Image (cartoon, rainbow, N blue to C red; front, side):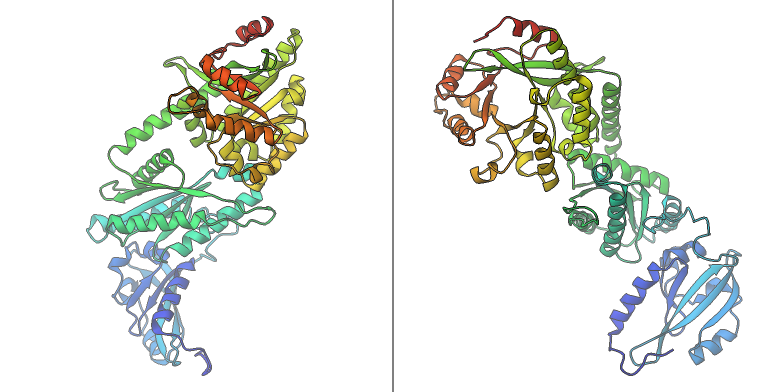
Length: 561
């Protein structure tokens, strides 16, 4: 029915944009036509039905692709009436074709909308669901993406288009499910699908490849500058905080994007997707919230990284991680009062690997949680063994990441580990970097408060690098601070008076916190820290990190200073 006289006026350009957007939201094969039924736009469903890229469809009469187009259509067009008939595509498929008039602001027919549906196809999905579509996000799934991508790639082979494929991976999405629950994760995925749709034109292919991996295919851009702009726009869309029902604070996420361009990076859909996925892995190595293009060198780099990740996963599972213990000594008594557990990777091929060489890999690959839990269990077991052997009371200090602290199950896991190993909460100390504490979201701060309420000690590691203000720091549930090693190494240098180390000690004591200096390697440094009333020290001057039995033997000797 034509619009009423009081319908709000809209420009033809706005009407066209709205119609094109609406077209691509429909699941049937659809096309818009001008007043002479020449095709002006098509959705992916029509491309798939006619087995042609849009570049071969636009501008041609609809009748070129369906037979027979009954003469009744001429009457319908002349009268501005809807029309329907069973027709056959050029490939022989029988469909029900429907035409509907689209009215302009003046009330006249401004064009037509055509929809086609296979005979016997009741809805876009069967009662049991259509595996071609993702039931959660309503986006095309992998199989349908591959079919539609194949049409674009065929056009690229004919020199009619260049296909750019972007794989969009949500960084750290597994933590959303773990910390907030599956329902929250589903809400994030649904909203991500919406954001991707709003960020792209309706003619682009957008689909869900797997759990937290989306795919965007573009057939109408050729320059790297344009592709860069698209990737940056998608990353920015994901970076907007997610306000999820049932969560107190917004969820902050980033996306890593891998880009592959056909035909130079692949000639079929599976190959192009594989190369885009390899570029995603490379982007994740670069850092969260970045994108990378696939090149001939990408495959080798990604294979090497995957090999390292698999080796580290086996190391965690097969017990190749080793803990060493470095003493913390009280400057008041000269005795060992604590041990910091330091992890090493005893690789059968490469030998002993230091944490700086594999902890970043564990964080990027999502292995930091199982690795951290393994370290915490083994450290608590060692302390329990020392206690049973009659060793004087000690604290065991374990480094934990902000990601581990934020995990909803971390508190309960910690309680379980202490119960299973039989250690008291006040004998356990968790060290978390100052920057992680200062930049921590509310859920991290709440977790720290809950952990401290158990009686577990909390220490800000590498203190002095995060530029925390006194007023801000006093609000955090901390028992101690640890002077960054760079400040300790400055002590005794000709161009330094140790002022930074002195300032950190003063800050700690002002807040009634225990102050530990690590990296102590000279007698001058030790004397300075004693003069400045530092509480505890650790470093190679006292002892290198030791195996559990050697550490126990050192403690049993008594005072070491």
